[in-house]
Amino acid sequence: MTSQSTGSDGSKASSPDRDPRPVTFRIARFTPRPQSERPARTNPFSKSNPFATTGNRRARGRRWTQEYTIRIAPQRTVLDALLQIKRAVDPTLNFRYSCGHGMCGSDAVLINGRPDLLCTATIADCLSAPKSMPNAFASPGAASGSPQVQQPPAFRRTGTATTTTGVSSSVALSDSASNFTTTDPTGAGPTDPTEATGLTDTTGRIKTSGLTKTSNIAESSAVEIRPLPGFTPLRDLIVDTDAMFEQIRRFKPYLLHDDSSADSGQAAQAKAAKAERTSEYRQTPEELARYELLSTCIACGLCQGACPIYAGGEAFAGPAAMIAAARFINDSRDGHRQERLEAIDQVDGIQACQSIRACTRPCPRGIDVGEEMWKLVEAVKE
Image (cartoon, rainbow, N blue to C red):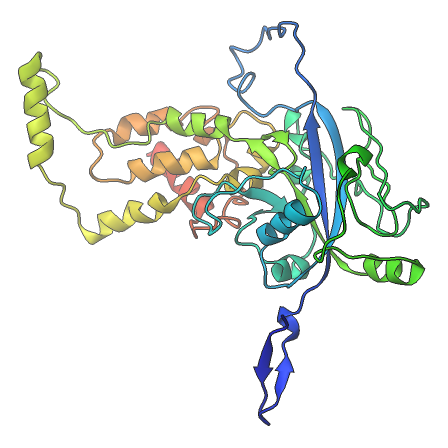
């Protein structure tokens, strides 16, 4: 249904911002290679590299870029568009989301070269934002070494292929091959012919026939979506976040306070439990504000994907782990500030931060991550 608004003369006029329009989504697809039954070879340097087993690794499998053109209103979110594609066009598309309101942080991806959440990024904002990708955001495999230079787009524009079938054709890629896909003039259907079996046209898809409509689709706006850099891709837009949470747990993200640990036995435990129930923590408004904003971090990983050090594959715990540590370092109720500062003062901790401050821009909770990282540097120096 087309939304309408009342003009100054009392007549009803349609609102163009709410009318569905054709939008092309170019999504990076990935299918992992089946694991070999042979035991994995051990790395003799794994002890010196904390990221050798759980860090940023290049996953092996088939990679390609696939185009979907649907009709959707610009004020809808990118998550709405992916759900429409999955339900009506290609059920094999894989992505992760949970709450859908920017609170869980599970749907972090790279949209037009910028880390963002699927549920908060609107299509209108994505089409109006400049499509630039820094070198650190090169590709899902850029984390296997030093930052790579961004390669040319791994796709052909809709309407440039020579095939005229109703299903776009695809060329499977090895790990060392370049990524590209060949699409048909219709711009419909998945690139893998086996995935297109049983799919039919729906109201959410663009049905085209002939060269005239093909040129219209070629001129439509496009949104590029890729997995978040710095994380090992699992399938399509889903990445492995276990390494990030392991680094967060490494710095003990919970309150630590002094108690009567010198005593022993059940009496000491009972005394400590009673003191914990009866004691209260008094804070000034300044002390509360010092850590309150950091408590809103949802561990989405956008700051990790924006960081050229972490996304580039260097040994770095990451901004998310540093923010988790800073939240308790700045808490006046915690009694182990010195120990926490010593824990982050490591070569793969705060020492790896280069103060680039790229981690600040994508934070969905408004945390100035770069400034907090600089405060940690100053606190460690003191």
